[in-house]
Image (cartoon, rainbow, N blue to C red; front, side):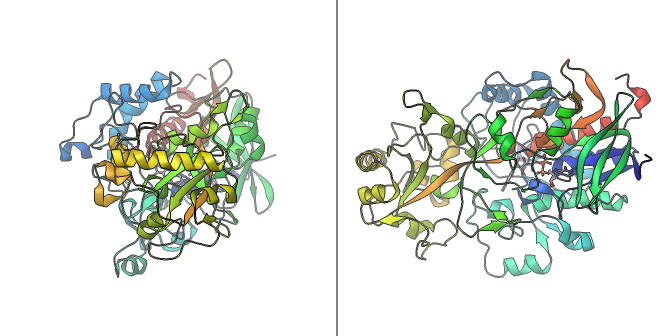
Amino acid sequence: MPFSFSHDVVVLGSGAAGLTAALAASLDGADVGIYEKGTVLGGSSAISGGVPWIPLNHHQDEAGITDSREEALEYLASLSLGRMDPAMAEAFVDSGRDTIQWLEEVTDLRFTLLPRYPDYHPENPGGKPDGGRSLDPGLFSYRSLGDWADRVARSRRSAHLKITDTTLGGGTGYLPEGELERRMDEDLRGCGNALVGPILKALLDRGVEPVLEARALDLIVKDGRVAGVQVEIDGKPTDVEARRGVILATGGFEWNADLVAEFLRGPMTAPTSVPTNTGDGLLMAMRAGARLANMGQAWWVPAVKIPGDIAFGEQRSNLVNRERTLPGSILVNGAGRRFTDEATNYNALGGAFHQIDPVAFGYANLPAWLVFDQAHADRYGSFGTPAGQPVADWIPRAETVSGLAEAVGIDPAGLAETVDRWNAFVDAEEDRDFHRGDSAYDRWSGDGEFRFTKASTLGRIDTGPYYAVPIESGTLGTSGGPRTDVDGRVLDTRLQPIPGLFACGNVAAAPTAMAYGGAGGTLGPILVFGRRTGRAAARPLARFSH
Ligand SMILES: Cc1cc2nc3c(=O)[nH]c(=O)nc-3n(C[C@H](O)[C@H](O)[C@H](O)COP(=O)(O)OP(=O)(O)OC[C@H]3O[C@@H](n4cnc5c(N)ncnc54)[C@H](O)[C@@H]3O)c2cc1C
């Protein structure tokens, strides 16, 4: 059957990976088609914090921050437990600076450093306790996108916030009087929308318009090479030719319950990404004979489900960052025991949910609850309710700690003992069990009034009523998939490139494996390998002997 559409390069998915790859390929002279399954584009990238983590970026120079290739590689290696492919890590570190400079040249993106935002494991060798590797995309005016402004995925809560306004970036989550109205009037958007918008604009300016509601179904293989894709358009399977290559950029498989059960190393019940990420690209790569890697891994987060909170037609899972790092709260398991430094970074903390109790042979820390008291709720608010307002009715509560434990099914004696022990640690200003507050990261992420001190995260739990919120094992997106070379070529089981097939972003095996260096630890590599992949796919076939 003849192809209905034909391009040099076909990109599947329109998150940061797909858009960056598409722009790189287009600038290198390829005719590019982008096909996106969702009704809106941008994927999880558009609803993310929009922060990339890039060692040695040029904004460090202006701020007088020192960094080096050796430090960055040593740091990443310290977080990968031997699982990272050094060639991929080197390609990331070596191309990061260029990628950011390139994005600032060819799009309206203008990054700044997230001020003093520490790496996620700042005390590891090569880690940066005073920041310098996490970048803020600032604000971008969606007025410049015309009709396309309404076709980008966005989070109703944070679309107009800059990352530094959000609790993740050290802000309160609220804007000063008048500022929100100003940003809404000018349609100034921050975070993931500020990252995706300028790349989309650069593509539109070049005449590359993504096709929405176009779900890729399967690869078309001809004469041993991926020659196109079958895409469902207007409900009909449509054959799209790719003269040079197909780039899988379809995100992770976190919304596919079967793949989650088959591959992830432990329970994951709360994906926070867009629900269209159902592993379609992974399955296509598997059918094409790809070698897989990093399949048990994801970018983990502790998450909460607030009843009635819906996003993209599904129950929303929210990252739990603020409530667990602020003073006056602890995380406990069913035995009423703490099991981690609550203020550590979300990705590392997610690992604690997968700890197996070898005797009972069950997950030791699931289910889990965040326990806090009235003083915490009064000062900071809780789970979407601002400070000073009553705690939401859906949150279980009791006048005493053991009463709370009984109400939700935690061991009462265990919880009472844990709270007493915690309060003694707070009084001594030392968490002898899990060292909460010892890391520069912990001291940054809690109460901003006490930033850089332990008081930013250590606080007694002693003022009833007491509250317990179920916390689930969630993810920003999975990070395993087809193995690629440093230019995004998908490798087969003999580690040879599958002709015409490329992958980048969360659909592929993460270039840093399980290492999550700092804020932006997923989007940093995604931008770098998105660009590398787009450039490689744009090269005429004759220049490769696959
Ligand atoms: C709330 C939140 C905050 C985050 N903040 C940060 C941050 O600040 N920094 C950071 O580094 N990371 C962050 N992350 C993680 C980051 O957003 C993801 O790792 C990243 O966006 C993945 O990019 P991607 O392009 O691979 O996938 P996505 O951006 O998810 O895009 C994949 C796209 O592919 C489409 N697709 C799926 N199947 C098909 C198909 N069959 N055909 C066509 N299209 C298809 C999807 O609809 C989607 O639009 C955050 C994530 C969340 C959820």
